[in-house]
Amino acid sequence: MDASDLHYSNLDTARIPKFELYGERALLPDVVHCETIADRSSLHGWAIQPHRHERLHQFLHLAEGSATVLLEDRESTLLRAAVVNLPAGSVHGFRFVPQTKGTVLTVPVEALDATLGACPMLGTAAIVDAGPRLATLFGDVADEFAETRPARSQCLAAVATLIAARVAEQIAPEVGSEGSPLIRRFEALLETHYRNHWRVADYASALGISTTHLSRLTRAEMGGGASRVIEMRLMKEARRLLAYTAHPVGRIAVDLGFVDPAYFTRAFTRSAGMTPSAFRARVAEGPVRTAEA
Image (cartoon, rainbow, N blue to C red; front, side, top):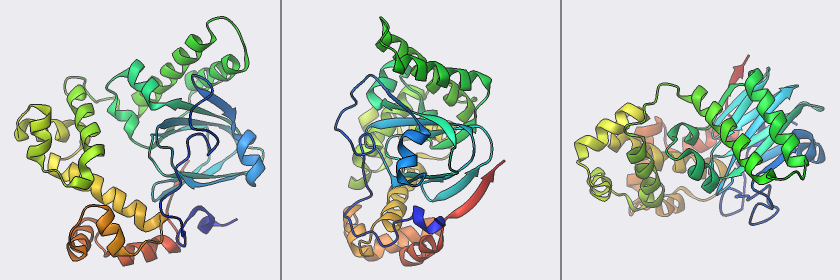
C-alpha cells in the first residue's frame, strides 16, 4: 500500500465519507466507545481510509509501533508514542505498521461540550506527545469500558474528560479563558453560516459585540482577524471538496455559496497560491509529508 491509497482523488461519491462510528450506527451504544487500534484496522490491512465523523470526537493513542496519519491535506509519520486529536468534521486516515498497539477513544461532541464547555483548542486536529500520564489515562478508560462496575458511565465520562483536557493543554497551553465563550459561539455560528457568506458584521451582530471586539478576540485566540478566519473556514472546505470528491470546480463553487464560479476561482487562488484545478492535481500526486520523530 502506498501513499496514494489514502486519497480519494478519483472518488465518485457526492461527499467525503461521513461515519458515525466507523459507519456502524447512528448513535454510540455507550457513553463513549473504546477499542484497540488492532480491533478495526487489522480487518482492513491495517489501514483506515480517509473519512470524517459528523458529531463524534476521537482521540487515538499510539502506544507501540508506528503509523502514517492523514490530517486534512497533511500526512505525518508517527515514530513515537503519541495522541492524535480528531475533532468532529476533520478528515483523517491511517496506515499502521502491522501489530501496532494503541487505543481509539470516541466521544460525542455533546458530551465534551457539557463537561469542558468552551475549549477551542480541541477544535484543531493535532498530534501531541503521549507521556506517562496520558498513557495511564488511556489504560484506565480501556479498563473501565471493559467492566460492568457500578457508576461505570460516570467513570468513563470522567476519564474521557480528563484525557480531553490533557490533550487540550498540549495543543494550546497559552489560550486564555476570557474570550473563549464568545469564540466558541463564534465558531458555532461560523459552522452554520460560512456557506451563506456572512460578513464580519453579521457575526458580530449575532454575538452582540462590535466588529472590532470580534476581530480582537479572533486575533488573540485564532491567530487572525475575523475576516481572515471566515475566509480560511470557507477555503478549508473548498480544499476538502477538491481533494476528496470528483465534483467539477463549478459545482464546488455553487456548493460553497458562490454565485460566480470565476469569483470562487479567484478567491481560492488568492488563498492557496494556485488555482482549484492545480490544487486538485497536486493532491492527486500525494500529500505534503512531515515526520513526527
